[in-house]
Length: 184
Image (cartoon, rainbow, N blue to C red):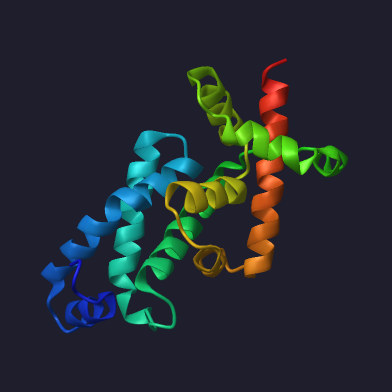
């Protein structure tokens, strides 16, 4: 699969080589589950949603137009599936005052987030990430965990690259505020 172009693989699957879908599944199952798990904390529910994503991908493979990479298209389906699940549960996330975000100096954000070297700080960061809303968690996961480029995140979330940059910046600030609040 590493050397096989994804668009060619999709074409082969659509031409009847359905067993080739297992190559896509092998490659993307773990990262898709990881993304969904960032949004949906329940392991069993995340597993179920991951399966749902791949069923949706398989049944709508003929709708993949190739105007973006296959992985971007897949991530969009995974994100939308997880979002739909959270909407059904009406999960409420804490909000941070815009004034606090604006007043937090950029240097303190960089300082705190770059010094994540002890277990206590990492646990505090994990708790803060758990308090982020779905879009914020997804941004953090795609950018820091999955190492996606801003342009690809923009395509997945259907935002402009500039909007992604602003949201990432604000989310980093929100994480710092949530971490400071958690220490009190």
